[in-house]
Every structure is written in structure tokens, then in C-alpha cells.
Image (cartoon, rainbow, N blue to C red; front, side, top):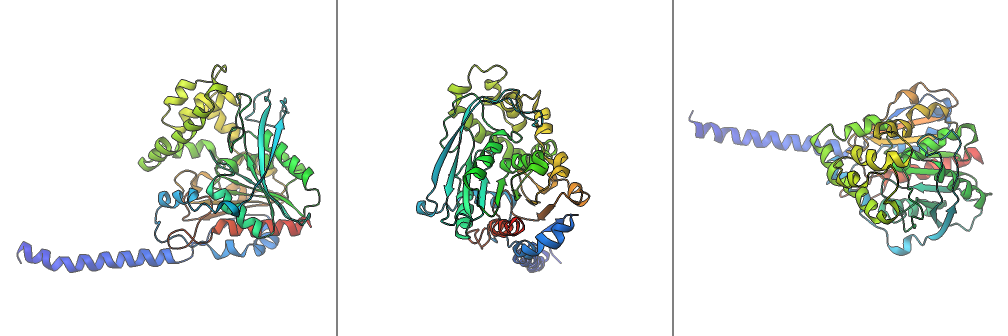
Length: 402
């Protein structure tokens, strides 16, 4: 057989094979992505999981966004209409403090600062309260935060969107910001919310990415004294040393690190250069020239938090080693294909072998990327799956507290 005849004969066969593979891929993506669950607490199995049917049914990833990178970009699209989240802002002026030794990843003296909470209130004084804690450079203006706030509010929750120092329009009044492990400002925000809504059936919180990291650390630091009825953590690195190392492990990860994450934090830094310049220990020129998060954090965030290096900062900020101290339900949801905070950076052992009184639940999906809310629908314009799970979680822990 001539080469041309062989090629002609092979053509239909290759086309059929390609069609079959595409069909298998589409069929697989049309199936529900049922998360792999890790837990050891009887409370989680008997009380919490039965009240989270959306979690157990699984996630339907968007067919037209087949990769983690494509799914990640859905976090900041689909802004709700302005009138969907008529926030009422409450600005909180924080005095300078000398934190107790319990709080790692924190300087010996914390300067004064401004934070804010943007509220979507309910007329029912007993409505559950849920604080939303945004990611790396997020705020109440972020699309994923606004979509979650809108959905929670429609479900009957009083929603507060936490804005850290220097974000969401907060003025930076001292040369100090926030980090993956600094918890003192959030601690004071939670106490403020508890005082403002004393009759709420439950006070809960949900964190996203970096916000999930310091929310989880706060819950574990509080232990038996935690005022929250529960916390949900989406795209949370429990081991920041391993998680940041993964950002340099592949070409795709390095691109995300160097061309997405680093520029975003450098933009925030440039906004506040007048306040940050001249502060002893901060190497702002090195931070401005950084091409990795580790380099940026080593130059700017580690010294701000009283840490010796980026690695020291990541070790102090990681919540994984503290999880056994948790005494309120903590739901972690992570995606394997997340290019920023992959589920591979979450050690399942604390969930599988933790003490009975640490009600921890880890749910790992194959897909979802770093979308924060796991959008469904063909193009990602449907239901935010993780927000539906969050609504059920808030109701479930409210029943327990009620």
C-alpha cells in the first residue's frame, strides 16, 4: 500500500478515535464531581453531613471551562447588579495592641488601623450571621464575595463582608497590613459582630484562599473559646510551605505565580507606598522586583509580621499543625485542579486521625480551580455550588447552636 493510501485509510480511524476520546471527556464532565470526604468525628458523620445534601450530591463543572486555569478566572466575573448588594458600611478603628503570645505570625506591637464590615442586614434579629473573609487582594467589591453575600442574604442570613487594612477603600493609617497568618484584626472583627448581633442564632464565618488561611488559624487559636458556631474554608492551604513550593513546581504554576499573583500584590503595595516607605526591615525595592510570591513575601510581608524569612512566615502562618485544637465545625473545600491552592497542599491526616472533639470535614473535588465558588452551568453562569453548600452549613450549625 502506498504512503498516500495508508494515510487516507488512517484518516477516518484517527478521526473516529478523536471523536471517541472527546465524547468520553464530555460524558465524564457531565457527571457530578462528587467530593472525596475525609473526617473522623462522629458529629460530622451523624449530625453535619446529613444536613449538607448539596455537598454529598457533588459539583457539576462548567463544560466550556475544562481546566483549572479557565475555571479560576470565573472568580472575578459575573458581578451582581449594584442594587443586589446594598451594603451598609461599618468602619472600625482599631487601637494599637501588644498581642498575647498565643498568636504566631504577628509582631510584638501591632499599630493602629482601620478595618470595615459591609453589612447586608436582616429585619429578624435572630437571623444567623455569616462573616465573609476575602482572599489575597480581595474585598467586599470582589465578584465572588458579592455573589456569595447575595445568595446568603436571600437564604435568610445577615451577611458581613470583612475588609482588611488597606483594602475595600479602607485608608491605611499605619505601615501595617494583613497576611495569611495574622489573626488579631479578624479576632476583633468577630468580637464586634458578636456584640452587634447578640441575639443571632449563630455567628459563622467563611474564608476564601488567603482569607481562609487566617480564618482557620484564628478558629484553632481560639479553641474552646471560639465565639463562632462554625467556619467554612474554601481553597485553603493548610500547609503554606508546601503550597507556595507548588507554585514553582510546574510551568503553568510558575506562570500563575509570576504573572497573576505577584503583580496583584505589587499593585496593592504601590497604592500604599507613601505609608510603607522608610519602615525598618521592609525591602520595598526587592518586593517591587519580585517575580515569585516567596520573594515578595520575604521582602515585605515576613518582616512586617515579625518573621525572619518567607519560610519562617509560612511555617508560622500555616493552620495545619493547629487543627487538632479546633472545637467548632470546620468545613474545608478544595479542588485538585486549583492552580493556586491545590488540594494537594491540604494534608488529610488531621481530618482522618483528629481527636473526636475536633469536628473537621475536608471535601476535595477534582475540579473547581481557584474559582472560590465552584460555578456551575455550561459557561460557569449557573449556581455557585460552594455557596449553596455554605448556605446549608450556616443553617446546620445554627440548628446545633439553637
